[in-house]
Amino acid sequence: MIEEDYRYISCGGDPLTYLKSAFKAMKIELEPGQEGRMLFMMEKFPYDRNIFSSLANQNAMDITKFEEKDGELTIEMVRNQQN
Image (cartoon, rainbow, N blue to C red; front, side, top):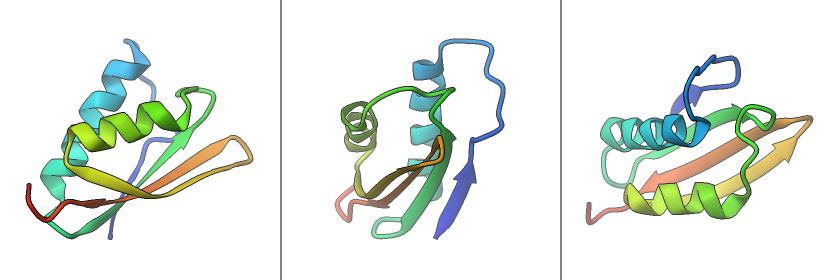
């Protein structure tokens, strides 16, 4: 499993644009069928699960775990076999 930690990043631009880039980068790193994990601070990325699911789907990934705990967000996903 590949893990990307975005909890302590500083993005000066739009957080949603940053997320789009992060999800695209994860897709590039993962082989079809491979799993990945992304870590975020909810304070920096205050979006609901639908936004993250949409970004995953746009990049041929399915979320398998979505967990919020102590202001941190853990998202685990798998890249689809077809793409």
